[in-house]
Length: 514
Image: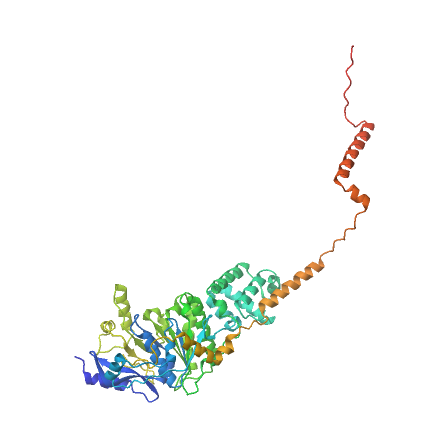
């Protein structure tokens, strides 16, 4: 039997922090909830990123909701990717029921319902703040990685961006990028080669096809103006709580490339815009990516490398990233190693592959003498999880089976009426509602081609205008007249040839003897 007192002491020592923290739940040992032994999250290390994993129905989305509530209460803005459409309820108060009463009674805590300040956002035509970015903001390197271009094609893309910069040709949307690719493949090829070097038509054709593929996933609605201002993600509500920004991306499951494109651009923009902050008492912003496998599902090796690099570096800007997924193996090992907080809900062992996954998951956690981790992972109840994180010194805390607190907000979606109310009252919806179609590459290059075509027409030699035929000419041009002329000419020609002895042999008349 594990030493209960020693376990309690290890939890209390391991989860006591000097700075602000948030109670995630109470520790469990041998199925018993140890009241007064609480597992807490220190805000100081929330920029060290995290993982929330578990099988469907084990409560991982509610854990995400609980952590978002704690961050908002501490005046830390949050951005949540709502893939399944079940996170909007955080904007409404929760309701006390028998299950919640029993849970909080076992932990010795008090349940207080609360609604949180929410901003609904969208990448498509759904209700909410429209998020957009321009092609120029992505830049040639990021665009190349998203499209999966090789070195030669990346060089051409860099040349294209350089040409547009030098000639003040804005690249705002994919229509601009497509038009520019078509231009440098044909009419503008000589001009580009004269200034920057050889252009391979096969490369431009390949890039164009890949841009079209991105368009087919609905990327047209994302690229354009007005581009979203990152500062609008880091707002504090009037009551001092951090805004909970919910990006509604329920239609992204069939368009993983667009979703990963957006995520990478957002992370790159945050890293580029935010100043260096180092270790802070609280992060500036925390991102939660639900169904995180969609970010990595169709990512190229270059794209994965870019994501890994950004995740490693962005914590110094005061930004934390939490991945929420069913299987820890959905996250590449290079990224998984960067995640300081791990909340592991139950996994199911239905197949040999499942058992292998559970064994690998158990090996990712600190060693403990109080649990058989590979067995316990399959026995966790709904709303229970194995938790470990980094303390204020960056040292992993003891692995603890935890009975998690329930969300204080609604554990269900908002109604259409409630969504309409939030959207109507939002100042950001009005700010980003109107699509701006400024003069850019498409219009500039189209005008340039039209001007060149007009000049070509002017330089062509003009044909003489045919004068009106006279009456005699009209008569002579008549088909009957032309036939009479041809017959007369034939008779005259034969007569002349005959006179010259060239008219051919004439048959001699036979002499009649009668």
